[in-house]
Image (tube, rainbow, N blue to C red):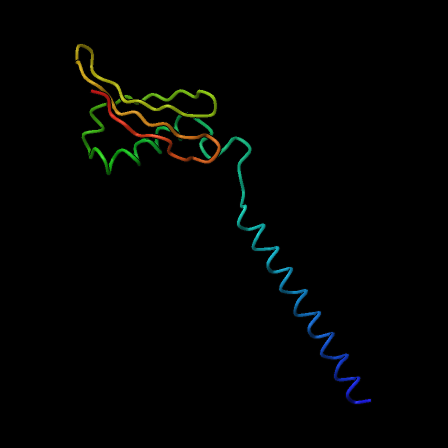
Length: 112
């Protein structure tokens, strides 16, 4: 009788522990997918420009500010952010392409 009772207790304990670990695993799976804003992580022009500056600064240094004002255009879910040159100047500007939905930087380059 004691053996049967011990077996039943072990089965119940295993079921409770196993069930809790499944719930915990499902929680972590949901947490990994995370929150995604309905307008994406880069919802507007200002955010795209701020991300561009944050990426450009380590590459080009403070010289990037000579290309102000910056402009951003959204095309097919991709923000294209560019610097500008003063009137009469020849040369290229910094350009970055940023995915609107997740903020992924697709490319960074500087024209000549």
